[in-house]
Image (cartoon, rainbow, N blue to C red; front, side, top):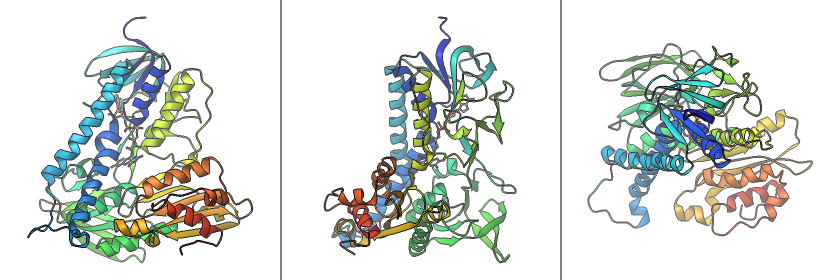
Length: 472
Ligand SMILES: Cc1cc2nc3c(=O)[nH]c(=O)nc-3n(C[C@H](O)[C@H](O)[C@H](O)COP(=O)(O)OP(=O)(O)OC[C@H]3O[C@@H](n4cnc5c(N)ncnc54)[C@H](O)[C@@H]3O)c2cc1C
């Protein structure tokens, strides 16, 4: 085999691409990955999950220090504050450690990293058009080129005053005032970070509630907590104009009753979603069916062209919106690699994808919301348990929120679990397994939850679903 021929060529080393490459190599394939960034790991490691969660951990540390008195910790004559230079240094060290870790895994699994931009050339060939220029021959190609921030019509990103998450993770100073457009996961996470760091934060959401994909009770609880923390929440409001000047941004926003209000901020963060990265890839020219820039795939991630698969943020499955999440792209990467190695694989169940939002308080959810379950025609049974009652939550000083279970009365099946409060992004794992195993509420009740833990809230919510919470 010539040195530039591989069983599998993967384009893009984000969580979709690098995980697909590792699994394919583990299964005996020769693998090359073309990645144009200076580091491996894509959006998740370099621009997304890791930097934002690192910043949120800083915000949490500051929160604990700010309430030092309550904890009996004496900090002589100091008002705790954040030093952004040190914050970024710590965050960047974490990112470098993890991206280097992926490089190590590539070496361990004998995966070749070709540094450059890939272009599909047809007939199983991939041109690397810059960097380490060459033409690769592949038996199978996996496209995992991911996504990039996008704005909305009329709002021009200038990357200084009107920014996206790519700039927000690097802001050298804490802005005095910050307006955030969009209250999805990215918007509310940055709201939590910068409010804690000291900014005046306003969050503007077009739909009537924050985190609109979550259960309505979760949205209401988050808005209550955000207001308490001093975050201004303008829901049902559209940003109609934003003009960047040397000192800040002038905005106009229109609420549902068509009233226009003017706002001003140091920085406007546009967090209104991400679009696919396919420009320059040549996907359409080689005949791949596309939909609004996304690559169309079937349930096993085959594109319309044989021997070309695609996974991650760049794909559409044609029905509901495909979740743009790291853990989704990596599961898709594993599945594709196993299919290419001849293993029997089954489509993923997107109803079982956990949604984790690491704002303060955290949100973890899986399955049907109460409204969705009712729309599906289930005879719905609800049980809810507040974290505030738990000893463990009191000890941690984290007493906001609840766990809510949505179940089917007829068969007692757990249809969805929605939580907001401490450690929710960890606790949701039990709920994901419950849905995967088609668990009943009774089985959750009979599962022994250790004491004193936050997970007791899940057990108690199950009891509550049967009308008999012990501690509430
Ligand atoms: C601020 C933020 C926070 C987030 N937080 C979370 C979170 O907490 N949890 C979670 O699950 N998800 C989170 N996400 C989403 C998550 O990062 C993405 O869903 C995930 O990274 C998608 O992986 P991917 O492999 O499909 O694409 P990407 O990670 O975007 O990787 C694509 C890679 O392809 C490369 N590439 C593109 N075109 C070419 C080409 N032609 N040639 C060579 N290389 C190319 C790019 O350089 C990139 O490295 C977050 C996203 C953002 C923006």
